[in-house]
Image 1 (tube, helix red, strand yellow):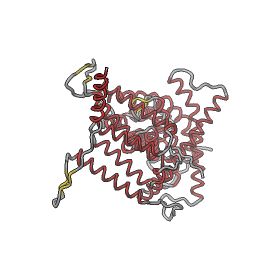
Image 2 (image 1 turned 120 degrees about the horizontal axis):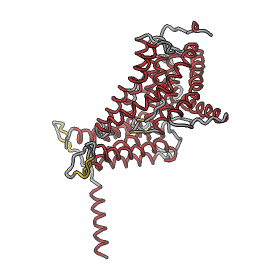
Image 3 (image 1 turned 45 degrees about the horizontal axis):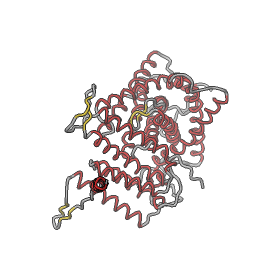
Image 4 (image 1 turned 120 degrees about the vertical axis):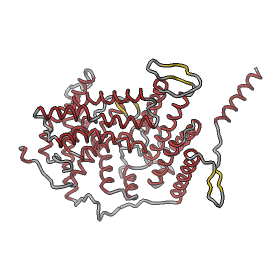
Length: 197
Length: 300
């Protein structure tokens, strides 16, 4: 099958909802593995494989990838004992991790297959470096405010370990995922070219 | 009927299992907000104990809640360590000043433990809900309070798909092992690289499942709006539910008025209602222990 067989849908369809739900499951299970096996502070992992999929899903599936990241993180938070009243706002950090590369790729019209230098630069800046910064600052700031992180020293320690871990994970996992699977994703008809459809 | 659930539900004959999921949701939020409002060491300790007793009353064995309980235990240890090494809690005596500028006073552990008790109370309350409520019932509860159908459907399918992918992931890893591939070899980056090979089939399986479910849903006339859908089972309300909701709301109001607004009584213009004091139990225990010790010393 060729690239010309990309299915273009006019609006939001049940497929987008199902895509969101199923992707949430993948992110949820990978997030649980990260937080259970490499924890730093409650809900923060040194190595968080889910972030690799959050970046890829954001780039491939637009807003649906970002929503899936939110739900996956929410499930992980509940599964690892984070109280429900905190799990709901804290999960926004993973939404941001997918939303930043999603926005950057759509605004710059970059190709997820990373064919040109422009695509690579956009990917490294938005997908690798910037994707986890706002989410980590937001998540750790809330933890600082509610006392789970006791001081600014601990805050920066958590933010740095979060980001360094994510840089490694995204570089090692997301890059081959985008290079190898983008063409397949496009052929399945599940690729979301715009923000929503 | 299968009761398999990704979350921690275990069918038991306990009063909590019979409650309406919305009642449990109100109870969880009430306990969580009370734990957030109260800044007192002793009260937070008792809130944690009471929530733990409620969790035991569910008759769900603690072994079944191993993963979250281990995570909570780890959380406790990390928080105490972080407070010991990286906090600036003021106190009369500074015992250690660390080279990075934080210090340890006589209040450090008290403050750290207050935070620990608070978090653990909230986590136990969440487990109370998740251990006694099927994920489908949580969705039904959300549906009953008019949460849009599309959100309920997405959340429900997401929870169900986790078990599905846990199985797929296990199958892929076993396939790799059967070929003699050791994915856990090498340093952390090498291990991650090894796992990429296993993650690619997982993504392919995921996308194929999305297509299958999409075809199945669309062929059955699935609509995002959920308009025209009927419920096979309706949530039941009992007197116990209503009583528990009233107690939860009253409890929250009591702690909010007393500890957040600092009121000792409520002035309703026509009459004044004094807020009752919660008896302090720790001083009684301390006094009992000191009496026992002095008795032992007097005897010997």
